[in-house]
Length: 161
Image (cartoon, rainbow, N blue to C red; front, side, top):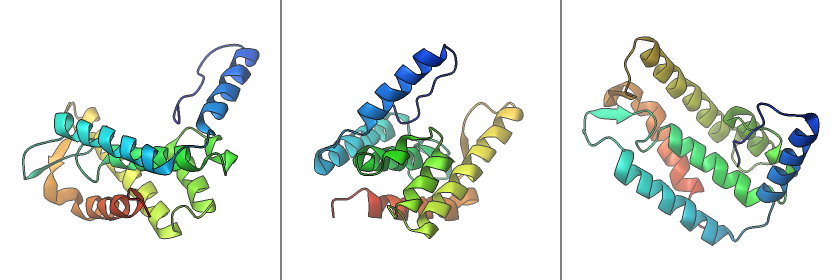
């Protein structure tokens, strides 16, 4: 629901959907339980979808990739929207990261790293699609710096304090 948005329908239906979405996202949750569920779900995805070659990096599914960024963003929204309702205003990761930064849930450096890495990974993926390369795998060395920064932030955010 963090990324869900209305793409067609009447203004009344749109408002009902947005109210329902906000109410669901703004429920107070048990942080430990939520964190365990998110990490468990992410690990299952990695097991089934991540790249197994040592010299390749899957832009979406490998550790430090797009899905890790999306999971951190979604965890922070689900865990803090009850305190900061504006976290549910937007449905795109970049503006959600802006709100996360504004509430100091991430440092400005961490938020910028995630925004920049998200843009870079999406851009590489889009270029591959335009070149009719259907997979999202690149040589591992190409994006190592970005990937390592995302992994460092994951290891900080996705633990119980």
